[in-house]
Image 1 (tube, rainbow, N blue to C red):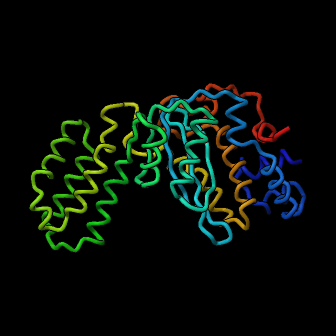
Image 2: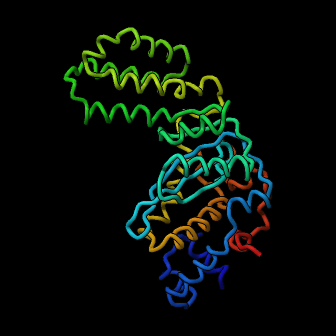
Amino acid sequence: MQIRAGELYYDSEASYRAVSRQLGIAPYRIFKIINALGTNCKSTLDVASELKTRWSGYLFIDEKSIFVKGVEWFLLLAVDLKTQDIVHWELVSREDETNVAWFLLIIKMVIKYPFKGVISDLLPEFFGTVRWLLPGISHQFCTYHAYRATEFYLKYHYTGGNRLWAERFLLITRIVCRCKALSTALRAIEYLESHQDELRQAKLIKRMNILRIRFPNLIKRFKDHNLRPDNNIVENVIKQLNQKFKKVAGFESYETAYNSIKLLVMRYRFHTFNCSRIPGNNGKSPLELAGIDTNNINWVRFSQKC
């Protein structure tokens, strides 16, 4: 009964009420069954130890807001580039450096992820923590986020009044973020560096300083071609998880949120892709892409600790 309830609730993305109708059990009892499965569900650390997954070494890290009784929490998520497997996740109250550092420390020291590169958005805590915790590891910022952040600032917050230079600055930022060659990015930033006086007069010097600081992490992709220029893959994973989050419309307690995410992540790792743009991924699950034979494994049964 527990296995069937878990399959119906997650595989068919049904509600407690819909599952209760199929099994002839009250909705609240279905909730209790699902929550019990979540309580006893293996962690990402358990799975890494048991299955010996083989990952690419290139890791996306991102975050998503989760509401627990109306209070905003944050889901930290780490996804392997090649396999799209969820390496680790954590639900934290703040996106501060302590939580991010602990998150990455677990991935590095306990899960023993073979770090070769990191791709993330522009969250300062990601930047600072990766720099001191993973020295020598290339860290690529998402170029899409970098461009959109500049575009948003110039559209809604820029008060300099020089629209010509504002548009020129946005164009150069676009070139840096979307160009296909390192030489093009270098010429673009050199152009801005040679027009410091104009940028200062146009009240764009602060944005220039921000771009200058971010620039080394916007061009890592040219030095290691395994790095992606954006974090679309991890955002697509979040979209898949979000389909279930939207149905529950927030959680009533941290415990139910944590238990639900444990099961949802486990189900994702066994679920086969059918619309992936990555060649060779369709028809396989993230765990299969990570070298695990899942043919005879029922994901709900596997999820449970002995």
